[in-house]
Image (cartoon, rainbow, N blue to C red; front, side, top):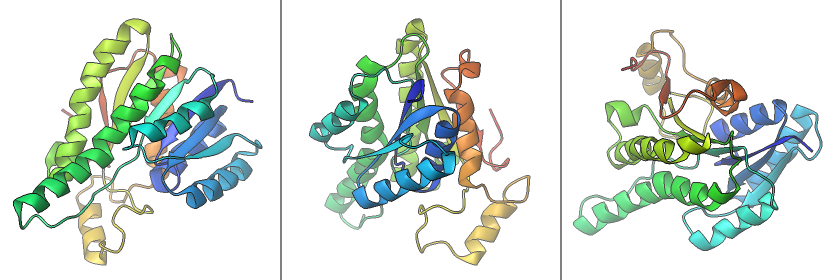
Length: 248
């Protein structure tokens, strides 16, 4: 059993799976949380093998927009202190904004997927967060800083304001709260079949380093913020975007 416990939402694929593997390699036991039980189980088994520590990664299937399903995560924690919560669940959800009803459904879906999931998971685990030393990390998006994603941009930007409030609330207990804001990351399910070679090339050209990000780039930032070395870093938004948006 690892000395620390981490919970990673959206942990079945892409950035979430890379984060889970990185934290497991750092010695954490990891719970990967998501809606697709089969994907999560396969990922947990693969990450176990890759980190070389049997049972290091476990899967918990739950829809984090449903308050009643959060009990599954709390039960899986089994009374252990939670050292790290990584809120990575979310994504861009399309819709039909041609009517007011369609617009409302589109916005609610994006707010639920990107904001409510983070709020409910964090609130459910708040009593279990290690004091002192707990870490809450929110995965945002470059779209929160430069726009371009409509309801998705607004939802990710909402995480920033909430993180500032939560950092102020939990700081006296020596719990840090930070945001990682990725730029364009290839090798994920985010774009589905929407990405074209032209779109990829345009996004790479917008960086200063001339390449797309990969999930391990984001995982490295999360691993730092989750580590004891980041105990004096809180209330921050860390852009990991190859220079597509400069810090400010």
